[in-house]
Length: 242
Picture 1: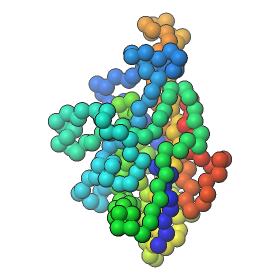
Picture 2: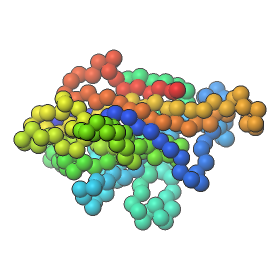
Picture 3: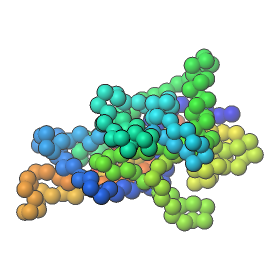
Picture 4: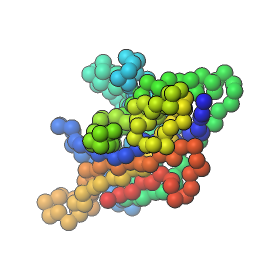
């Protein structure tokens, strides 16, 4: 059985986002021009994880991920609570128009102690049952797009925390998207993420009341997974703006 050290989260292929009806986008400004009505901090929220192979949802902090402070968690309405929504701020620090590369979120290591063993077993269960992350930026859920085995583009509203190759060497769920996921009885946790944020510059729009504000209508394009290898500076996770 194989394990990796977790140095943040990861996903693969391509993600996009869309606005929900009735939810207005937020205006963002670069740090020198930020103000209460036009912040520079772009908050990435995480939500509960769920699986179509299990009826049990897990809060984000149930797994040994890079967990942010929950003191500033948004207040869910009754409908969100009934549907199991548990929205929390993430550890990702994103500043508008500030591209980043190889930014470390946190590191994890494990020993043979009962506490470490329990954390690993839960991660193992999550990958084996294909539990899905649900991220939110600017009131928009991030969707995960990839080409399936029939080379057809498929998009979902969540992305996997990892995947499992069974004892017979058969890749399951997200492990089919990369031929490197081929070691029998192995768990691959997706531990790096590339985020590309697309935005609309409104500074030249005469109809926009405050010319210094920028309206964000982003898409998130994601990442390449490096598993069982030392990640070089050329293959680190990135945050880019378009």
